[in-house]
Length: 319
Image (cartoon, rainbow, N blue to C red; front, side):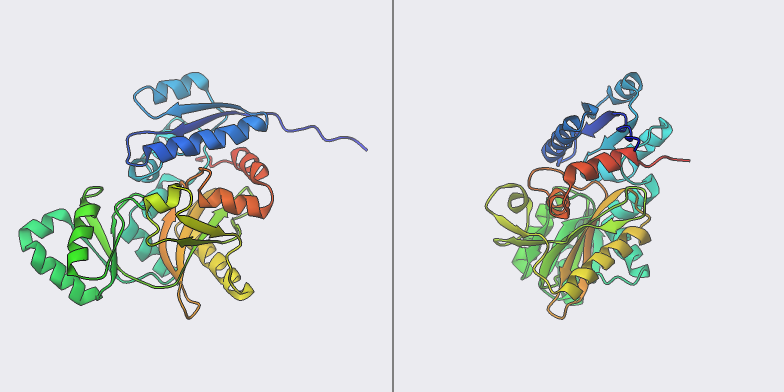
């Protein structure tokens, strides 16, 4: 029997950092991924995103790039367009899918075309509150959606600027917190239920859903609850009946396909008391830190290093 040769190691550039509010998380994600890839034998260079990045990429000439810049400027398609222009294969999604996913109202509207439910919401720019009067606008929104609501920035992740509001005073405070991260606010009807995150990966054989992760946090699942040990508890797979596990996985796959996503995504859902999944958000550059949900799901699936290796060997290549 002929022994099959091991695949050749790759030259991989991991892009992390940048200037978004999620810079520190991005750097943690980048170094965590690089550590795994180096252990597999790949040559890996972690690059901070700055004015030297394009020249550094040209000089390093990687076989594949793994962009791990979180937040608006890492997930809105701009960085992906740079990599496409450089003709560099990368782990992730085409810039078109990034744009559809990065802007939360657009993502919600798009997944509804695939038959996925998403809570009713309104999106308003900061300027409307000065032009029309903050008190009038907030009263109108509360009357239209009802309370409680969840207020979140139009773009961005990691729970930054996201607040729960159950009365008028909390709604005003939530808007102030939101506008410190974005000039547009998405105000969304609150849906009670179990928080579920489902990661989807495609290593060349079509998208597949990893085991769903159930998130249980003390209070709101905000930035502190996500990244400070002890604030949240995770169950993988989620403590759901088999039919509900299958349902949330299928919902995440519909989201992935409907938005036209590539190698990797993570869909955040609420499973309500009737067993109905509600789409909350999607991430095209999910966190990869020691506390992040996709790595937890990959470990439960059985082979996190093998998944990372398959992703870099089957990157997105713009035709």
